[in-house]
Image (cartoon, one colour):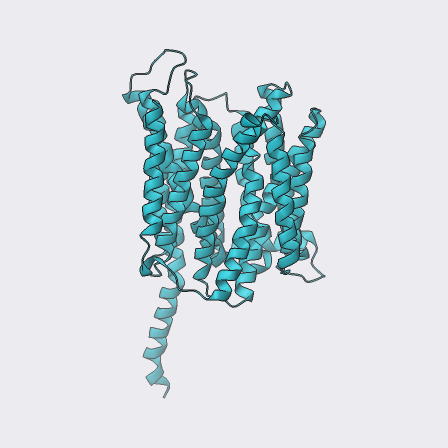
Length: 459
């Protein structure tokens, strides 16, 4: 069965290589040398930040278990992380808009480094503090860096379309290549060099410190709304009004929460889905395969976004529909494939089918990230960008906390079915977003037509 894993990984790698090497002038956006320098500087920092994040991921649960904590206690630690992101995320997002995005990015580095340091203690309270710090850092990672990029890009006068190039490359590197290398590097630290499960967290601290040094030495500061007379409550109110008064922003937030909620639920479900009878599966290799699928998706996204005639709002409907179908596979295999009751062994035929479907879903994730970033840059007002982006994460974090708390209460097929339904709803909302995004242009055209008709009457 090892041949199956190698075949899937090799096939995906070949497709990614072909896509990247076959890019022609239509797939490339002509840019300036100044923009390329700016883009590469950002990608270096973003890759270092994501390396610090990916190094920790595979070993958090394992570290807690080596300290002797059970599934329930570990679950509470995870809930604390998502809860912290929900409670403090909007606050740190607002501070990023007011106090500066560069400062917020530095705060991310410091907060995450402190979180890594707490992993050296087996004390539950210290580990809980580390999860709370990690939750705050996660909110900054997914808002402050993007907000800084968009503001700096516009401040330097670069073309709007060039943003999509930075977004797609950031996902290709940060959520693809860096994730694979970080997973392999963490495996070397823990297994090959036998440095223990804390070693990846120490390595993550080093990468974060390097990234912080680059930010401090080369980035300039930018703000959302630096006016002194606005307190946090006023910023919250302004962000809430922006979401409530602009249907496009509200739809974008709902779409993001539905997709990311399904994605984070998938993270918890793929292992029991592929090994329901304790089959022996290579978790690290499968994780690398998923990340390669995400790289494939980001490569496809870069081709799609390079075509100015093709709207993101249009093709994302298909992406959500395909991702919904991919997460239906665990349910379909339950009914169509005779389940095996043999404990242990290698992955089953149903598991193989599901793995292929999960790779398709991860490919959709790779398309989703740069595409949602592009839409956020178009629809979210600059003065409250970080605040609104963290508002979007509130329902997401509530959803994930509920799922974590009730993960054993429902059959795994019910959980996948719920995620699939959420993705169908995201598809419908995306359709609505596309319709209303085109409406202003139509109304302007009609207004001009009406003016041209009445003009002779006024002469």
